[in-house]
Image (cartoon, rainbow, N blue to C red; front, side, top):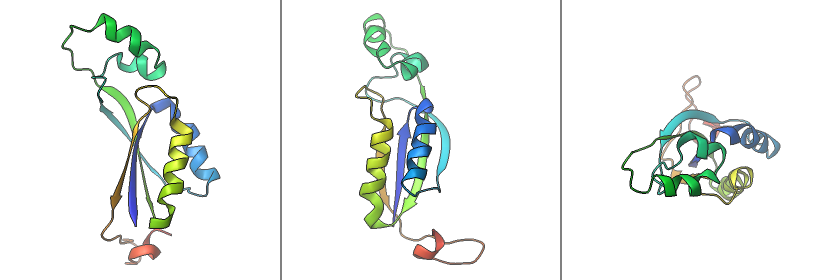
Length: 127
């Protein structure tokens, strides 16, 4: 089993949830997070909504040492090993704009999963 963590733009969450549901993956965890990537948080929340602002803001703030946090959403989903490629494709298709800040996807191995209610483990704990 694998855990897939995806950092995406806040306003892309509805489209991403719909894409997951359409692909047959209704279980999902969403968290509000803040961070920054290589762009250094240039443009802040405004550039999150309109990525074209990153180019404008980076010129204006080139000498500024401000450390801006950009709000994002962290989506987490647990899938079987053979579902990873499909889920990653779903996330990319729902979030790819071609602009800096589209997000990141991390795929992590899971050693064990246990359903608290029943004590089921492994695949049975997540289906």
